[in-house]
Amino acid sequence: MDLKTGLVGSGSSVSRELDLVIAGGGPAALAAALYAARYDIDHIVLESYQPGGQAALTAVIENYPGIKSITGGDIVAAMKEQAESWGAVFEMASVLSAEPLKDMIQIKADSSTYMTRNLIIATGAAPAKLGVPGEDKYYGRGVSYCATCDAPFFRNARVLVVGGGDSAVKEALHLSEFVSELVLIHRRDKFRAEPYLAKKLLSCGNCTVLWNTTLKEIKGDESVESAVLNTPEGEKEMKFDGVFMYVGRKPATEPFANLVELNDNGTVRTHNIVHTSRENVFAAGDVTDNDLRQIVTAVSDGARAASAVFDKLQ
Amino acid sequence: MGILSDSDAAEVTKIFGALVRDVHVKVYTQKLECPTCTDTETILRELDGLSERLKVSFLNPQTDSEDARKDGVERVPAIIVSDGTHCRVKFYGTPSGYEFSSLLTTIIDTGGSEEPLTEGTIQFLKDLDTDLEMQVFVTPTCPHCPAAAVLASRMARYSSRVRSEVIEANEFPELSRKFKVQGVPRTIVNGVFYAEGSLSETMMTDALKKGLADDPSIETNLLDYLRHN
Image 1: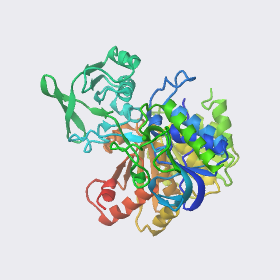
Image 2 (image 1 turned 135 degrees about the horizontal axis):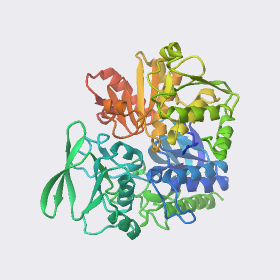
Image 3 (image 1 turned 120 degrees about the horizontal axis):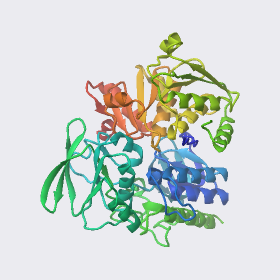
């Protein structure tokens, strides 16, 4: 039986001054925390209320070098445990705003304020919404963004998965083990997902892929009952008990909008991988405009950002 | 055969090193019509041996019916964590996966030396002039569930006005259906307020302040109180 031993963190009401604040709780933040602790930088990690970030929601990870197969939850738990063993300090807090104040940065979190000489933004991204009618109404009533969390509610049910990237295909494969029938729709005529994953889905016995198809509306009463699809043959309403959305990610950069330059899509504009428009602010992982968004690149960013802070402090 | 691996037991023993006070854990299980009771009992028996601070007692709701009535136990397996003076913090279902993490955290919150709640939440609880019944539906595979489960447990641990029940949604399908649970974590307060996902302490208390003042007669999303202001 799988037993997770990682404790849930707590917030703080104490305000303080530090050399480094790391905002985020996913692989980029955890790698930055490990390196910051080993560099003996006076730091704190402000871990959000969704610890582990998106990585924690991934059912299986098979492309992290050196580890053949591991769940997302286990890899981030191992990363956190390793960082803590070197002295990384975590607090559970959501960053509400970050403003420059002389040569420092003032960070306001839920219940405390921090003044820091340096900041690493590693707040990751949240699942993007498609914005179709019914999506908000049926969230938690059949609409889900987390197959790892919610798959058991759809045992022997009929579900729709929306998307064609790695997340959509990976989570569809996880869901297919629970449901009786799975339909995946993708707006293009081929997957963006890794060919290995795509092949696996195309050979899955209870899965059907509808190409060039988009979601128009989610319908139901108390919970999801059907979805209206735009298919090459025209509009079609199909019965579903659940709809899982994997249509991209929205970077969690709102609190930093007055601090560093952002791109139109909300990502932090970076140069030299982790440097931002402000000298003492760095960015790492999915929050940046770097092209590859994987755990392996996120941890690399986190290490680079912590190293850059260390160099600055010398 | 045991459930905790050697490495789990070593890790938990290390975690329990933070206990400075006794923690009382009551475990209600029964042999009949409870497929998950045996595992729950085994896990708690194994935990029991890992710290002298942990005082675990095992009860049966049939034979210990008076205790079950006083403790307000409505289903099994049930686990109650306290300092021995109350029965406000309950877990229904096997503490496996991420629910094990919620249970461990609640044990440390109860017997540790630090107050985990922030000043704002403590003030909210001190100002409460009404009772709160918090139910948090979770699954063992949901990494975001412990934050929601632990927040409710912490609030109930602190205030005699609050009761929390963390419910493993898969093990109690009828209850899940009754409360329309199709996604986790789902927190329900006083049967009328609900929240999907895990809310921060500030969000939860701000929304509850506004919600309690509003006193709606229909089911209301707590996040609506934050969006409208």
